Image (cartoon, rainbow, N blue to C red; front, side, top):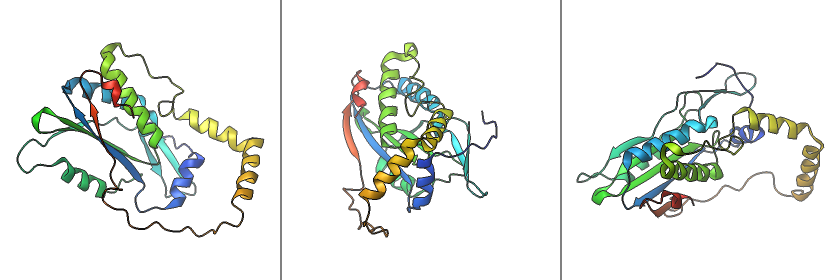
Length: 229
């Protein structure tokens, strides 16, 4: 539950805000082949999402200093049936990817389990970069696989493992690093490495349809741990 306390941002979060890309989100779609216990999977994924405290934040961006409020409600996963004629998971995903995620209101992640024809399933996940990154997404897949296989006997996620650490852990670590001699040393190092590099970024060209998609086919035959990329 949210306490309403406005917490600071990490340096990485501030960098995300300063970058101002058109879309600050990322995600992936995994197709699960083989028998899958739908209720068990949804329970395992919901448990995993509950453990990821950093996902459940909204952001205050209209004050003198940006901040974040932790503790919004855990949502998902949703289950969508696209087994009927003319129903496509890709159509729904395209609409979702075009939907802006508002840091001020959240939620800043989406998880959907698609029921596909012939008993297959697809798992779509999307995040705002203020609350997760690619390694964190992979960790969520691995943790969900572990919880699915272990069921109610699954051990708690390691509390210091990103993205499962309490929000205070990265904030404290970030503050200590920025106050340390290592911060100044690293800054000098990168200033030397990047000396002479143009300060105006070169914008990338158009992304092809194939380049803009991350698709993987993975087994779900009772060994869901193999989900982990």
